[in-house]
Length: 345
Ligand SMILES: Nc1ncnc2c1ncn2[C@@H]1O[C@H](COP(=O)(O)OP(=O)(O)O)[C@@H](O)[C@H]1O
Ligand SMILES: [Mg+2]
Image 1 (cartoon, rainbow, N blue to C red):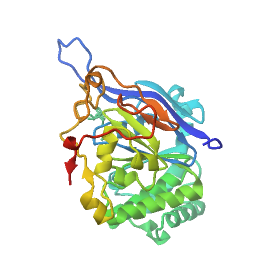
Image 2: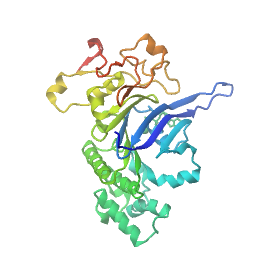
Image 3: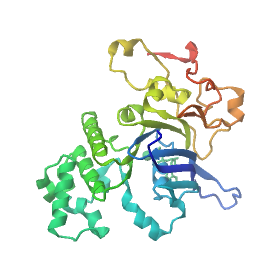
């Protein structure tokens, strides 16, 4: 990626939520929702982010956009540290960076027409006048861009299906020509048959306008098709990061391997015969993360070192990063999972 520019640089970002302690509690406790994550997002790329519910994905997305004030770390946008900007400077930067949410119904005002919902950011940001013909034309254009009939602008959110509402939400976000969009599980609440349509739309829009996505999902099947690269999160930390194909064909972290196991393979012959490696139980609480490697309590390959020493997040082969003591430093080969630890499917 030599001619590709870094758009966003996330550097050792942390977001802790304080836990209200009892009267006599002297040590300050905190939920370590995001605990030191680092990665870059390039112009025009989609970076997928996956991990189980509660691992800190939404908090990471919000902290990157400064919707949550980070506890520490930096977020550079085009080289400028967002964490150091005044609120006025941040406001000026906002149109460039937008967020799409899982449940568009919760974010679209039910009492506002589609015309108002989609046009509102342009009015708020002083780009166009309320009630102007220019604004109406722009709303019509935005609806067409997301594959909706412009005549629908008179209608209200409840008159639409989940997929259509997500399209309206996307049209609203597009109105300000953002360069970077955090998509927080935008398809998780939709019917499987609709999910692909929304993903395809988002891909088309990216090809047309060249914006970058941080595309958050709780399982790999949802980010598989849209992502250029993928980060795998667990308990507020990144376990593995690499390009999409390497993540599926050659995952190095046992956690990634377990997520991979959960993705159905369309070929029934392979699906029946392949070995599955399914994790049991729930992740530990981010208020009280395990010592050493945070994954050690669920890892089938756990060693003494994993319990005491936190593995470094390091580059194993160019562009392939992993935080695991057992990842092969010569690169390429997978962690061997003993048969006894595998689950026949
Ligand atoms: N505003 C908040 N106050 C306190 N704890 C929070 C807050 N938001 C999230 N958390 C906690 O932070 C952790 C990560 O949450 P979240 O980022 O929503 O995870 P994900 O999006 O991966 O499901 C969870 O333990 C959650 O309970
Ligand atoms: Mg979330």
